Image (tube, rainbow, N blue to C red; front, top):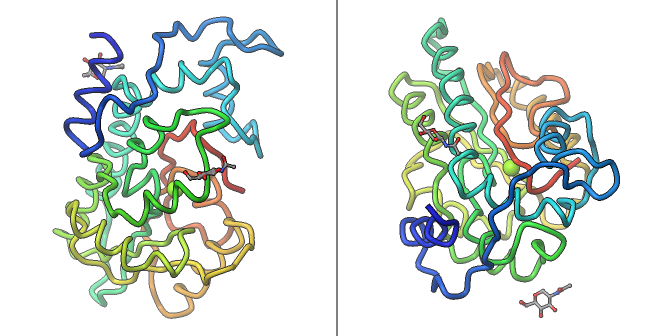
Length: 252
Ligand SMILES: *[C@@H]1O[C@H](CO)[C@@H](O)[C@H](O)[C@H]1NC(C)=O
Ligand SMILES: *[C@@H]1O[C@H](CO)[C@@H](O)[C@H](O)[C@H]1NC(C)=O
Ligand SMILES: [Mg+2]
């Protein structure tokens, strides 16, 4: 199937955008294309997913098409499915407390909600991120759910494990974020924790600080899932962490 067709069917499924606006991606082999090291974009992706490469600012320009194919062509979804399958196995073996204090932490962007329609439209490289246009996208509350994460959410709810959303989105997006979560199937939560407007602290400090507070409040964090290492590093991490794929951006 051609990429344009994949893109088209993706957008037909998940967004109301005009498909003609889409940033079209060329098919790409992913071999031998890194300008500096000569390594493949596959190897670059491995390095970023394992957190061996840190603080990177953009997808290498020569890997934009590779990443576009990865994200839209099914590989991303498959990788997410493997993470979800492991989380489901872990959940099946959990012995839950009876005090209603067992919680699972979900990050939001690229974990609960997917901004792929935004990136498919704007591109996966240097020009992809623009505060103004990204915030406008967030305010539309139109991000689809990551299907695998939604399955996990539903399983947790059925077992009585409460979900806490912990996001780097700021308080001024609360209404749009809550509306978006509900619209795509995340109907309820124990807490929706957003950043104070203007808080510029590192994500890893902000998120681990919040988890510390939750533990002090008596919550048992049985699981923690996110697409960034800064979602899952920093004590207390939670009893078990799950890292979803995200080769599009890095947040410290
Ligand atoms: C994703 O998984 C499906 C089902 O296992 C498989 O048919 C498909 O080829 C995979 N796609 C990619 C891009 O890995
Ligand atoms: C970001 O997008 C807005 C509106 O779409 C545009 O006016 C602005 O120039 C862009 N900023 C950058 C840095 O590209
Ligand atoms: Mg995220």
